[in-house]
Image (cartoon, rainbow over all chains, first blue to last red; front, side):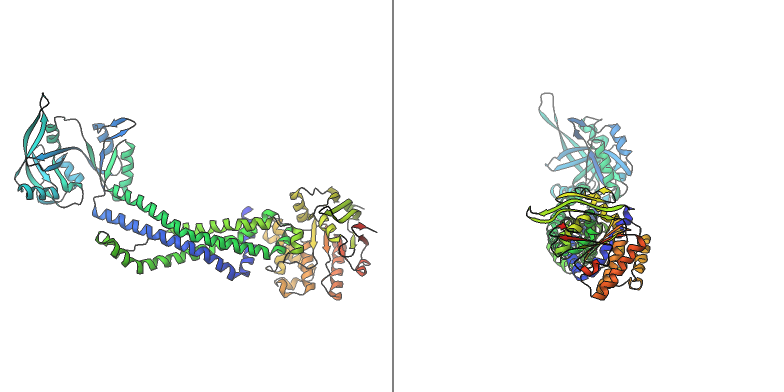
Length: 407
Length: 221
């Protein structure tokens, strides 16, 4: 019933709109340019975001997450065997392994970030590729070094595969005096360059690390391997729900997203200024149109239209302007992003340098159906909002004076 | 006979100075065909607008079909215009963007009739006024007489029991004037629709059932 009425009003308004095609088109164009600017800038922002995230995914080990202890509500959430079990039970976790983190120094004062982990965990969770050597044996004082730290040790201390790495572990005696104990680890393997924290890591057996620490029950974190990049953020949320902190390459994506949210918002805001101009054009056109049709509106009221009917009739005309503006705006926006890709990309790639070289062969703009739908919605909502004042003005006309004095 | 319009002690003043109507009293019976005569400025149009609920009197009472009109109740006034009263204007006042058929249908849009019903009733009335073959013409493509016929069809489409016509033949030549007048008379007789026609032409007054004369805002006969 109500829908039928609205359709009737839309059809009545269509007559008015088709009578003034040029005016409606020009007015719609005002909104369309604003929509195109928003669609263009947002899709550029989204494109850059997409490329940056893809670059991160490609360059880093996204599916590796480390859950660590956190302080929640004043209570520290330790990594307990129970927590380890809960973490392992999170859906889409392919493998997990508890770790112990230590800081050791060699005799010649090279600082080493030590990760104590099960040899099985190294395979399942870290999934390393060996530059040379082989995995360490469980329970032994063997070590596998990350690419960068291996290079440093070789350069500074001349340690090569098969050599023993002399490490000083500082303890304190009963008088509180520091006592350094020397422990030797045999270097059995070196990992390939990974571009993450494991390049600096010294991997040893977890049991050995706990024994050297003198505490065989505490863990510092759990390394988690997620089965697919798409599932990472879901697993992160689950880890956080357990009261733990999650760390990993995904944080880079989070910070890119945070940055791009702000950038896109600011870009869209400035592009949106042109929408205000478009909206004012609609107000102007519709005020003129109402003025021109003063008598007609008076007649319409005399033959039975209520002020509400008049408002709906005028807004129906604005809806057409919005629809036309939205369609043209989306099309112009697509054309605009095409232009950015063709002419703007070489410039942007040159400015960003090698880090973002992936941009060179990719589209730097990304038009999604959502962006186009938002463009359309902006055009429609803005047109209706702009039509409100002229429509109310029309509905407040006095039919007698409107018929007598109207042009 | 039943009364259909009853005006009692109607007064209308603009800005407390200009008196448009001064103590107007009259009764119109159901099915009557009445001319409202008077010079320009005698208050004819003001009276018509008040009877049609487009304007409110300063004081006095109007009964349409026995019911007192509450001029402060906008909804009631809209309902009155939708259901009880049809307007015919001097300058036809069709909507230029709509065809004859659509113009006649237009009031039914606000009466919330469905499309098929609107179409059927408008077509029926267009053939009543002899313009069935002009249904899809726009006002600018029609002569003044034809436009006024469409306007009469539009006034009748809501099945009103009163048609208020403000100088309906004022812009027409004498031959067309006759035709329009005859048409209104025919509708009056066939459908028993009450007509109140404002005019300043005495000659037309003679062809009506009765004449109400206004002079300076008062009924003189």
